[in-house]
Amino acid sequence: MTVQSGNLYIVATPIGNLDDISQRAIKTLSTVAWVAAEDTRHSGKLLSHLGISAKMLALHDHNEKQRAATLLQKLQAGEDVALISDAGTPLISDPGYSLVRLCRDAGVRVVPIPGPCALISALCCAGLPTDKFHFIGFLPAKSQQRQNVLSAIPQGVGTLICYETARRIKDCLEDVVKVFGAERELVLAKELTKTFENFVYGTAAEITNWLDEDPARCQGEMVLMIAPTLAAEEEINPAAQQTLKLLMSELPLKKAAALTAEIHGEKKNALYKLGLSWDTES
Image (tube, rainbow, N blue to C red):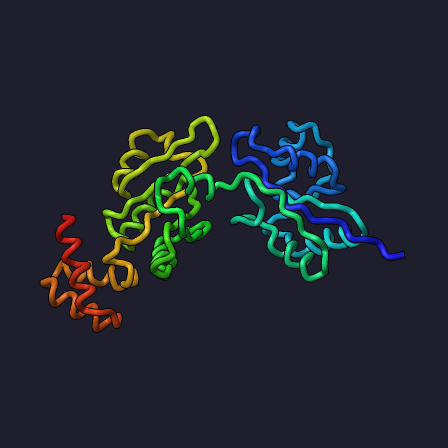
């Protein structure tokens, strides 16, 4: 007799406030045969708080491919499995891709149980454009690699969103200035849905000053959002903008724009107009 495969449920869990767990998520976690969690000790506390006693398996960055094969066997044997991360929606800068891909290829049903997600929670309260946005995830730890990633982002993708650690946030803000300029509008969301939730608006310098005012502010989970490019910048790639800024510090604007256009293949007139807008701002 053919055994019908179980379902893989992708279950969103709270990012801070435990009241944000949905009734559907609670019901699902209460009825599945297995809960695959990024950190079983951390998620075990959530399940205990909810009064759920479940069999758990760890699925994290270091064992995902091996554990995915094990979970697929359980699913194909007819057992339901729920995947959760430490907080928020699984797979969003968290493990799970290998498991979902394996299940999809094997014909196992994958079911979303929607709920909290830090990037969406941050964006909807930031006051930045929401019609288009580009999620970067966690930026690299090293400065030059961060700058390379930011510089390579195409124009016109809308508001940029990234996750950042508390110990790297000020270094990250410095790199944002190097790539996008000192006047770009930023929003820092920290400790979302928790007691010390805060949204900080301003330039990189203003946000850095806010962080420096109290060492306790440079703690916790952070989401950094970068406003879209100004109209004058939309057709000019960030690398060309960096070059223009460097040359403008040593050369007249007209010459700086001409050299930048030659180096990057950009339009000289567009570069000249952009340089003029920077002079006006300063």
